[in-house]
Image (tube, rainbow, N blue to C red; front, side):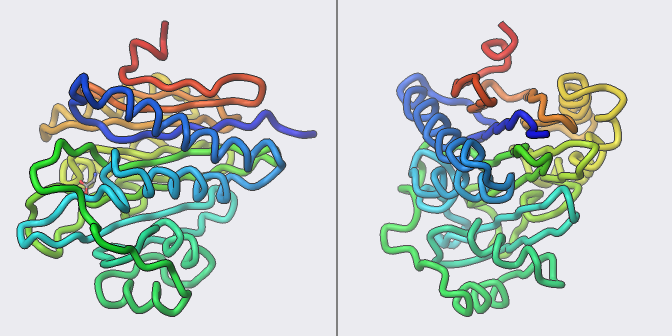
Length: 284
Ligand code: GLY
């Protein structure tokens, strides 16, 4: 039997100024449409996550790929990850420099024994697979109103679940700093018969709480909406902003955040796409 596919993307948990609202909604919709086209054609959740995240990496509205923020030295270091809920395979890179679509590099590592490559090792792997180099200008102008990590969770017609993230990290941080994005169980997780989750926000806080792991543990009992809200509620223990998008085992979507805004796009087979800047819009 064919399952009813679902896709949800996020463009970061941050305050979005009124002038940037339309761009965030449009960017989320474009990403959902790219992923939905894959799912509608019978493609895998993994392929849909890659298609959606690529779209957001190419859109300078978001802090990933082209729009990535700079670190303290003015350099751009990129992190990305993807997880296959069927096999529990993970591909992730951290501190990648000079590549247009880090999600492609993470996806190429998915069936490799290594789950995470960093720095020069990540760059060498990207070169080895012929990943597309980014042309200048690579980063958003210094001081630009950044957003945060982009992410995607997807459920395909064959029951496959996947989760992925891509980010430029946080602006002005120490070179070599890595947040939650490439760490399974911190920023993301996917497991068939449980669900999939992808976070955005203050990476140190999310990593300290192992927030994706906590959410997954509660998901079967609580369902997507309550598990998401409970995970975000945990942020009060360490402080900071976060948002998460979640699918349960049959693709029911939800999201939660404690930031002023959280740019999200969503579609299900026969429904959507829609974009939201706050969870109140989703639950109306
Ligand atoms: N959530 C992205 C980061 O902190 O790097």
